[in-house]
Each structure stands twice: as C-alpha cells, then as structure tokens.
Length: 214
Image 1 (cartoon, rainbow, N blue to C red):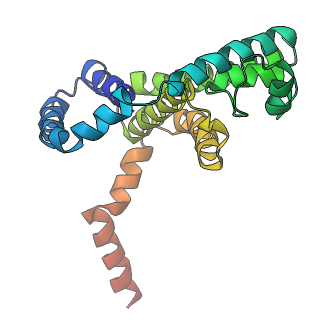
Image 2 (image 1 turned 180 degrees about the vertical axis):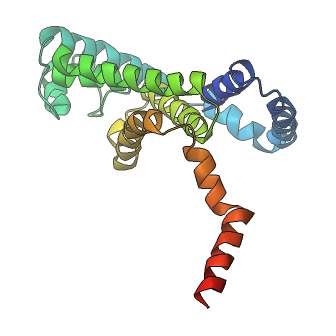
C-alpha cells in the first residue's frame, strides 16, 4: 500500500501538475512520525523477531512449486489441486499450505494456459486505467487512479501472500477489472453533470419545479 500510494503521489504531481498535494503529503509524514514511537515496538517485533520459518517456508514453497510447474508446464496440475500435488512432490516436508505467491500458485495449477491470460488481465487492466489518468483530470481519471493503485496493491501483496482467492479480495479484483473497462467509456462531461446535480443550481431547479407544481 505504501508503494502504491507513493506512485499515486508521483502521478498526481508529474502528470496532473497538482503540486498542492505536496503539503498534504508533508502533513501525513509528520503525523506518521508522531505516531511512530507508539507503534515502533510492534513494527520491530513483526520484522526483526518474526520466526525464521516465516520466510524460509515461503522460499521452500517456491522451490517445490517451480518443480511442479516444470512437470506440468502447459495445463498445470489442475485447478484447486495444489495441496494434493504438494503431497506428491514435496521433498522438503512442507506444511499443507497454498503457495505464498499468486503467479506461481496459478502456474502450478493451470500452467501457461491459465497464467498467461491472468497476467494479460493484470497488464491490460492497469494500462487502461493509466491511459485514463494520462489523458484526463476529471472524476473518471481520479477514480481510475484509485483503481490503478488498488490493482497495484493487489499485485504486490500477491507476491508474498495467497489472499487472491479470499472472497473479498477476489470480488475486489474483478470490480477493478470492470472499472478499467467502464471508466474510459465515460464522457469527459460525466463528472461535471454529476456535480451539477448536487450543486446549488440543482437545488434551485428542484425548488422551482415544486413552486410550479403548487
């Protein structure tokens, strides 16, 4: 999330030339510095005192998963078959857990046949959203930037955590894909029309209609 937010700030400043975000970012940095002493001990324990197996198990999973992929490169071991396949190929006595890398996990179960389309969905989604951000600055572009950063978080988190198949993450993933298709189709005036409906003119218009009806 931190990496994605930093990318978002860079895009806002470089592409949209909205440098007023810099003071707000400075305030956020100061606020983070103020609360750091309160959470510093927790952060230290999470990273410095975490069990060695937190990383070693992941690396061992990658090794076994890569071996499974090389054995079933085209179509994989079958959707949902990682755990049974792990029991066959595990030579490191790993716990029966999913691979903590979404791309490798996908590759072991559906091979290149499924992994290439998955990567294509990721790439095309982010490219479509970035194209809106690069061309426009209206509400559609700002929603596109939010969706782009959310997809970046999904991808980066998936490099070390297999939460992609959790229902809430899975649902959000396809919502982001849908937004990448819908947002570029919005006309440039869509945001202004939406805001106009909520503004004083809309209130006056509704009042006028009410008086006419009376």
